[in-house]
Image (cartoon, rainbow, N blue to C red):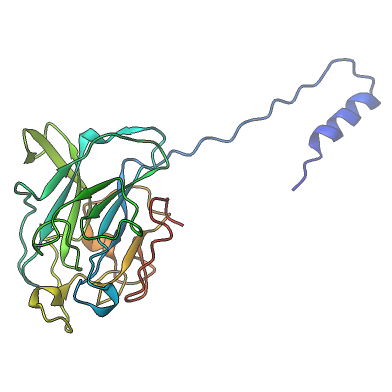
Length: 251
């Protein structure tokens, strides 16, 4: 909408012979506050025995810096927790080998991708490779039932990784939230999953954090939601992995 107020005032001033100048100082819009911290922005799950997976595990975790400043990643870590059944609820734990202390810096509006060894490097562009391709209970095997935590150094944190204390600030999946039982896999472990955005089979999908999510959360029940509307996550169709947004902020 065009504004005619300055022109109108200038016309009035001229008409009445006013000699003083009228200055109009534009007011800049406030800058956006930005996200409060890093968050998990994209994840891919897959069962390597699925015919459409071509024997690979295109597993990766993407972290997004939506804050207004560059962030030192050495203050953060990624933790991996493989659940073993559908019903057992337990606290997060990260034994040696199941966490990765990050390094480098992440500029604002940029993403950092952590990929499994088995992920095709020509398709899954990554900043770092983590884990093993042989043990389904070790990182970075993501089949819909393994949880990922983003941790941050905190002197009051109760989780010790190496010699530093951390607290969990964001999650995808949680050992404290029950899974549901599905069918179709020859491996019993691959037949229980978390429902996400109302989807009950989340074993072969790409997940995108919605652009409207500004803050990390440890409340997986709330984040996963019960419908496509109330979930914090967008979900690709089954076995329709989408890597077009990998390394970029959510579409």
